[in-house]
Image 1 (cartoon, rainbow, N blue to C red):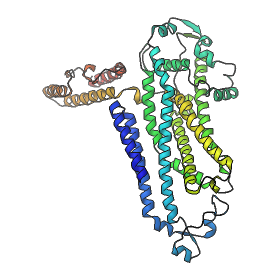
Image 2: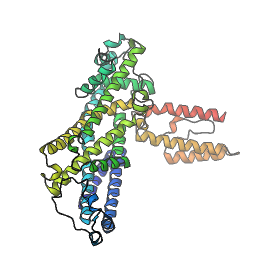
Image 3: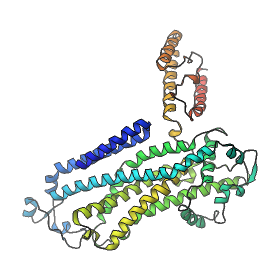
Image 4: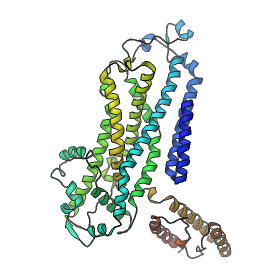
Length: 470
């Protein structure tokens, strides 16, 4: 319980820090961590309350001595309940076992939180240089290099030179090449510029100065909250890992490699998507105007579901944390050279795989995921900043109120009074009259780089509103 208090105290410090930075998504992620810790605390409480009833559940000795981590028990027998010993049976879980399970749960919580924070920190450090790339898109040199009045062949572009190779058209060769490429400059400047251009052309007007780097960061902060959670199917696989930790399965030779293999598969898929987008654009036209235009689409992803990659990363991080936590707990409880880790290869493989997966996921796969998953068919809600979202909500509430008043007869005067009252309370001009709706009523509190992109959504809403009135 003391460990839990320390974790909550540290989380409270981070919450206050993110409040000052106004990072709402990260605050929500920390709140999710607190809720997960409360859930683990509730499970621990249930184990404490149910120690005696669980210990009174008796099973045959033959069953109790099966699926043990050691060939023979070397730690002595736990004190059995009188009820079970009188029947010549053993408890399903002794009171001491329930007590140790509580420690394992809190060790797992600490490792999972630390692993997610470290992965996020490594990814943000790797993506720090994207800020300079985004700033470069506003320079005259960039505008001259990607002038839409210039024509060139696809393979002459920097993006085409990187991805249009002799192996690109062959699927059997493309996968091994994508596998190797993720370790060497996984996200190049040409990749960032081309995918950024494709995203803006698909969702905004040509030449828009949309801050793609901030959009990626906001999405990544929201995804961080998803990764911090623990789903039932992840717990189910953890039970599966413990089940195969029994003697005779030699799980140290294959279980620690599961997160690594899955992580490498995800990284290979992400690199393959970039190459496939380049090939798709090349097949449509061998001559490009300005820069190569890639078209975002869900069909590049597994099952047409970009979010599947996030759930896979979630699973990988949790299983890696679970294996490290289980290793640490058994080391502390039974010693380094216990039957849990009798072989030296067991210790080296588990620790080595844990560290490799942690670094590879944070510094290589996460930045690649953050960039490529934006190339789905639709853009995500994070396209709007918090200030823009607040302004849209105010406009929507105000428009709904005026429309409701206009639907009643003899309500023109009431509509005007309501518009004046609402405008004065929001500190804006009363431009929502009976026959006109103006975008100037949105109060964004402070200027934002993304505010200009709300105009398109507002115009569409106004058009629909006019058709309804007509």
